[in-house]
Structure formats: structure tokens, C-alpha cells
Length: 144
Image (cartoon, rainbow, N blue to C red; front, side):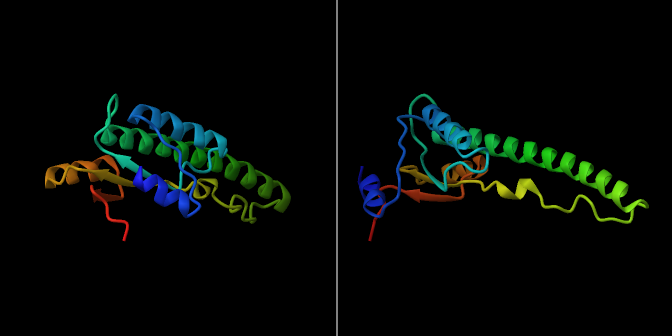
């Protein structure tokens, strides 16, 4: 509640989820809305949630991101082959530099995921990082 107010007062759009499963669904919806180019700029992930906890939700988000990158790299590779074939046909001897038209995979920007939790143990922190978080904040968070 406090973080939501803090972020909104600074003009940051906030999308909330009651649990990790709904959070993952909203992440997928955002990726689709953005045409597969990005999810959210950052995610504040509560690690202790019902239905799906924050660690599992983080893993799922990272899997979604990895699949997007994989698809974009595959698409870029097939475009590169087409461009190379076109360059060979145009240049006649294969001396062209087709296929260097940019890498679509570089267009995707993974989200920064910050764990937000009351779990202060070293094992909890290590597990969160193993699941894919970029940062770890222990509640209560000071906004000063």
C-alpha cells in the first residue's frame, strides 16, 4: 500500500496482482500488449504470496523472457539467411555482407525483478537470486 502510493505519486503506473499466478498472467498480457518487445520495466515481487509464491513467479517470468529471446533469435537467424541469399544473388559472387541488418533479439529488454520480503535469512536471499531476482529488499522498506 505504501509503495503503491509512493510510486503513483511519482507518475509510475502500477499494476497489482493478488498472488504470483495472477502476476505471471499479467506479465504475459503485458508482453503481448507490447508485441513481444518487453514486459514490465521493473517488478516488485513479494516472495510470500498465496497460490504461487514470488520465487516460483520469478522463475516463470524468466522462462517467459527466455522463450521470447529464443523466438526472436530464431526469427533473426532466418532473416539473416534470407538476407544472405539475397546478397549472393545481387552480388553475383557471394561477396556481399548480407545478414548484418541487426539482431531482433536485442530489442527485448528483460524486466528488473526486485524481491520484497520479510524473509531476512541468507538461504532465503540465495534462493531468490537463484530463481532470477535482480535485487532483494527486506520489509519494512524505508522510502527516505
